[in-house]
Image (cartoon, rainbow, N blue to C red; front, side, top):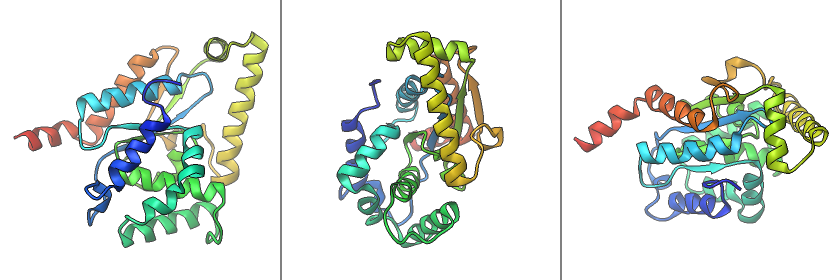
Length: 243
């Protein structure tokens, strides 16, 4: 597992916001930015997310560290810590209503019971509202599309390059890597289509699309980070705070 994508880091992020001095206790939500990353399988999503967290922490330090939540960690936190209910306890009433409205719109129903999809949608919304978080996959770009503090990036690459990355990361042969990519990409495309009626390849869902064939993963992390800083004028905010 890549540096900065760990279970302990995710729990530390949650506790940072939910402790008595945490930012989630403010009357108004944090205006800190959040980032979503959608990715083709094998395009370097974990590497870019981890590098982006380090870049943002170095350029935009704050009370809580920038933290990455990916699919597996999200599900584990949901399972072990009932995250939606814990976070919701500290959310202002106006934002509880907003989250409910978005959940209903996305899922087309009033949630009468906690399903995994409903939990994930609500958790992603609350985490994004807290800010200083990088959300990888699980439809986060669509789920948070109405939140003004969220920047959306997608990573793409040629099939050949992605096969090479998966072969190295998963210790698979070429055919095994190809099957893995096809299965993963098909599942992600179906998840977004079935749950949110969106096409994962729709470029209008994202602020920035990065081809990691031509721009390496480390450079991609810096590119996204610099664009987030520019988009939200974080350099000006930092200068104002220091001045």
